[in-house]
Length: 235
Image (cartoon, rainbow, N blue to C red):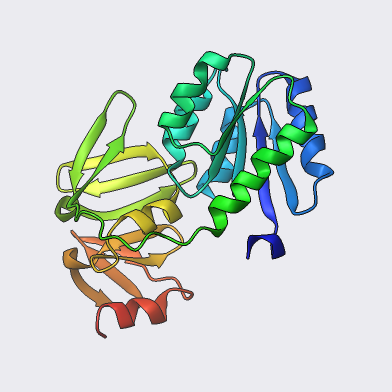
């Protein structure tokens, strides 16, 4: 249960005092761990790429990157609580399926209520329903969301804060987490072979000497993934 574990938290706001307020609330609340408190969106994105946080407190209006833009980038694995001085943004937040919406100045009792909602969501069992079968993913690039068919993906490569999609149509870069993508892409088609590589099993040309060759590119098989990879491809 989530009560027996620690919820790793990050705070981002362009106002230092707002960052410190939420950071102090986290420090004094059992079950929460403060991983990062910052005014720089790039620092949070690095942690998201490393799967280092479970809960993000983020301001909506920031000059470099808005809270809404960050939320759209991180997917469903990280719970999000918006903090803002503007109540009119609440609709935007809940359309993104955030956990809660805190109006500044944030009182500690209201903060605790939001954290309880996070714990409840983390303890919910997934609904026993059949999800529609998808054959594609939308990849957010600089100017657009591009549809990419699973069958067109050779492999994914972790590149610091970005993920590179190597496809039949070329390479696409997007801000994303490899772990999130690993849960989104179908497990019967995609398999992790290295901390930096997630491959399409149907695109393998051959396997040799601790590496996989796909589209004439040799990719290393990490020791931690070797056994599951060999089992996953029937070797």
